[in-house]
Image 1 (cartoon, helix red, strand yellow):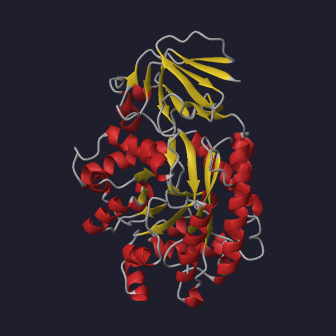
Image 2 (cartoon, rainbow, N blue to C red):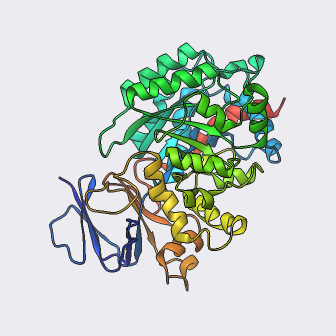
Image 3 (tube, rainbow, N blue to C red):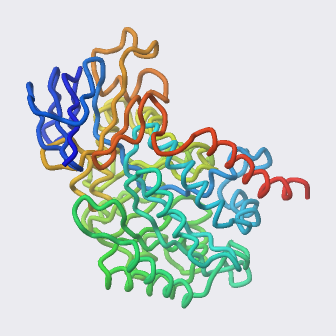
Length: 456
């Protein structure tokens, strides 16, 4: 049994239901879980981490991402594009995804997440180019294991091409039969429903404008047959709303009701254009929402009614969304943005630092139905991060440990990240991956994929 003692912390921010914070306490990790939080812990351990100058937080939880997009971020030609035009430009580039690109982009995205306090990530991977789609998602699960991240991976999909009235080109769509067959394979191979699981599978057709009604119906049936969750984009833009009304005669959420996509095993990305009545319905049915503030701002999509959702009892998690619409995988920057924009949109009392952090911790655990993460408590998973308070960005601002994280300092402040009882970031650097090699390889693969399209 491995043991790590985080000793004499400047403050432990538990994010438990009582909001406990402990100054000068220690935290003992035994194997993959927390076994003690106390003023004095005197046991023999494998490692002692002096935390006398550190704030200790539960690991952040990212509830919506597109790892592969790390290879296509910051492209000048689409910096002023809204969602549909942005997608139309990028689909042809994404049709050139390879196994190596998926593995490398996954390491890159997860590396950024781990270095910004995120210990659990859900990725929505839905692009399966013709000719290279076989076992493509397997590269993500391999990358998660290699880097040491708790991973909820999706067998995403697109089945409605442009010729059939959808948005994506033929090169990146599959048949319903292909999708369902591989979805079952991925569930059987990678889904671990047990407590402290490091690997779970979600079924995730992309969006109303890229998948058929048949796929939505059959995917939710398959997911419930195997007891896995389901996820899709919804209510992200007015263009999507118009698409649903014109194609289905229904608003986006009403279409989800029609195809059976409602319940505590379902959550939607974005949810910007839900009405007040729809928000009440989401709360009543325990259907969740992944909030992606930075992407929503960059693409000009809008600001979701997150304080209203929380007041109504909707389950809400935080998410960075795709690295090409963000353009980063920085959970601390996302946390700061979520804190700020709702103070403008709803009022300064509607989004406190504490509330923002709860979305990124407790909220994520609820969305992913993994209650053993999201707070620092006895018998919970040993997922946490630590920041060294001896930084210029915190000088003069250490009076409150939560607002120090959410509102103060820089965005690359994590000193140590621990996932499942193992140190994966130390001194601000990844432990299991050579960052320089990853940087060089990612740039090379990105240029090989992107530059030919920019020359056209």
